[in-house]
Image (tube, rainbow, N blue to C red; front, side):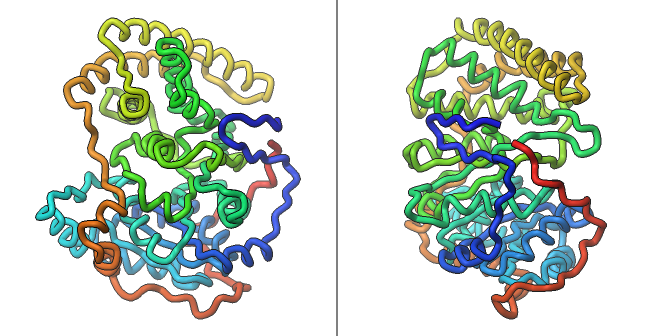
Length: 426
């Protein structure tokens, strides 16, 4: 635990567990707030989504829950609607890849707008924001596979935005990525790729405001964030694995650092990716796309790009910094009695290092990435797009809450949920 502050305001978890659900409900009822969960149909057969539903069932003041669902057929959509049928607030299951949505988005090509994909989290988030921002002043986003979801998550993420006097426009989570089963450190893409990469780039280019900004986030790849509608409507959304870094780049473009906060959520566990056997697989693919996104951010915000003669320097620096980080994480794990496989961590650093040169060369050929346009840009072309997309994404009418009072009972998850964790010590 620490209490240090930097460029980005840090909201620490001091381990005191001071949650106030009645006051949080009151705040939610005073400022329209929606939650967005991008989701694959397979998540409905896992305990994590049941746990998330159980926790969210207490938020009676929520304006709306939007489930941006990728599903194969209308029966799956109906099953998802039934899963959330007894929540104390409206739930909208938006079928992101449904035929009506595809038709609606394809029609925009006549205006020179390509918003038809590729399918993935970025595309789901983009659609979900368009739907959620119709009525909400604040939108919070959580993944559907969080196995440690607790009442602290939505409260700590949304409270900085619910009080307008605090002046916050964007909140990003950070946390300790530990496996519930093995207690090993995860988050390799952040620990062994993004951290060493940003340090290496700073050594090559020197101090730069954009690099300092990215390094101020304790978990820049965290997929949990919240923002005001004004900000959400003006963000271009990356459609690849660079989503989280790309959004940070967009926030940097629109918001002063003093209006950004990062929030400690404590212990956090969700699905883990394998490293992959090739650059097109697993964490290697993710790292390559993140690297390209970071370099594009440097081009956009600092007017700088790696030259051909700087690539060898980056490769050497990255390996050196990465090896140093492996030693540091090994020490941290040893003292905390966590299992640690130093050899596999070293191999991960080596695999990440081999991605650098080909990704720079690829970026030289195609520097412009596909980004989904901001909703404010789209509404300039067709002001009914939000309403049309919302209607197209509905299998049937929205699941309306019968009232705005807290429930005392709720349907059990499809599978048994893991026990809630105790309040994590910071």
